[in-house]
Image (tube, rainbow, N blue to C red; front, side, top):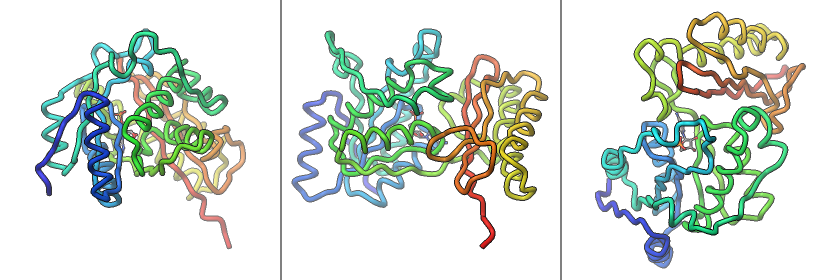
Length: 289
Ligand code: AMP
């Protein structure tokens, strides 16, 4: 483990540090985050450490991906604790810029991936993915990593980033790492900190519903239509949970499926109190040979 964590706030200092690492022959890994780090984030750092020689974690609560009525102001920003976690995880460099250096006045350019960004999360959070793809491309241009690491937890996001990188020929390899869960199944999320103990119990319904879909599709060989109905039945039976969507979709196009295909993903978004949670489970059908 290394304890030589450096932190930089400006793009110039970031570039200098990364250039130095590259000149030393190091392969650069990047883990973009909004901070409030948990074991899900740290699993991305560990993947980055396995595959690259110089791990940059970016911590930036990106205003352009929050809607006007979302939680930008109250989003947790425990910087000191985050730096301790980065140090313990062997991160080499933390980049935590301020909003003005990322979006200086007059900044006007966005990138968007039409189609895929308009369904599911995109339909419920207009403009969200435009903010995500723009900040990720900006961070790629600032850090210039060889490899960047994202979580399967934000399934639609990692698909969109893969599209962005392919479509614009960005010279970075994208890795998607499995969702890290609490022992009881709850997907780790910085937003879990908002949940009261009672809400935290209610939130278990998301991972339970995903397991129900998996059982329906894989063990009982039911159709995605039936799996969807069973997820929705479970989720709507839970007091205190308001469902945004629960669906079974093609793992690549995210088109809702009526008939089973080889690579699927069950996706859920729901609100528990004032906290909006998302979760998903990729489901591969072991087709008979
Ligand atoms: P965020 O700080 O929420 O923007 O997340 C930063 C990165 O961590 C994204 O690539 C997320 O998909 C990933 N991430 C968040 N939660 C988890 C989790 N429970 N397991 C794995 N990756 C995660």
